[in-house]
Image 1 (cartoon, one colour):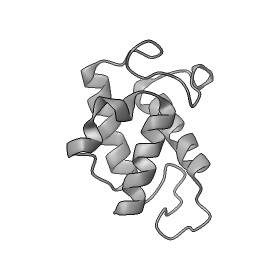
Image 2 (cartoon, helix red, strand yellow):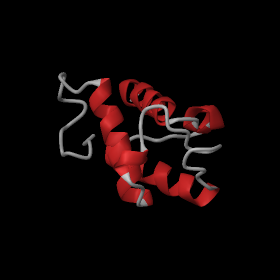
Image 3 (cartoon, helix red, strand yellow):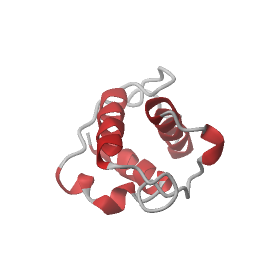
Length: 99
């Protein structure tokens, strides 16, 4: 698994949750062409905030899966996991640890 800065997640014990959160912000800004200054951990992704639509969410999920080498499926796709940048980062962190 490789993060957006090329660091191997599974081989890098120094990779922290904060780094993962920063990578999620980077993925959002690159994939969805969002200004990074408009994002924080508490930025709402769906209702309010960025107000992402279904196609934007699919693009984001596909890119996160590609960059982290994970699969977000089943209950991981619950809307609550995409509420904010923080909840998305937490979901990705749990999935990375589990796989």
